[in-house]
Figure 1 (tube, rainbow, N blue to C red):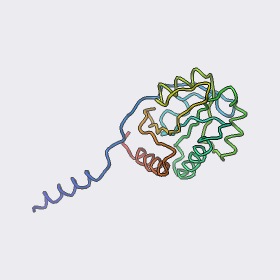
Figure 2: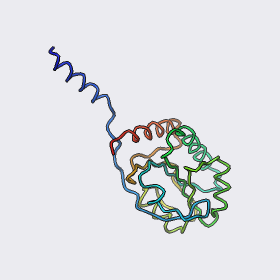
Figure 3: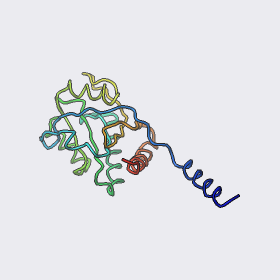
Figure 4: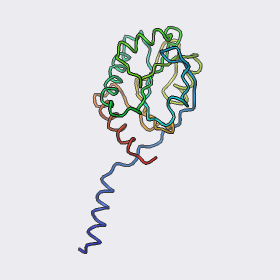
Length: 184
């Protein structure tokens, strides 16, 4: 084998060992809601140009929401070295989940300044959940998805993670780091 063919074979091996880029599954439109601080939250200002993780929860949930919020906390802790990463928890119960209630909930999970809890008009939350994140319907029964969505700096959804899967948080963290290395 010549020196050039050996180098080509080595480059091909390295290129083949790299996982392919994460698929683009959809696009999140720009939106304006209200954060746990009571301030207006504009996605263009707070999220564009950042990798972010989204989920839908409600604060008085006795089911999966506490688990999901603990998992988001794990993501927050595991990515402290990525200050540009954002975490976003949207409520599916805006009538009860006022900014003050969301602030108390955020405190319970030690949410740092990169983690936002958002509320707003039910119709707007429904549109985001159903048509932007493709996660089902927000209804009076407070049904919601238990998946996380990974969103890239261009607001494109790149992956979903089933939070009931024990390996989902580890995979999400690995994919955040993988997405961080993708060329812009």
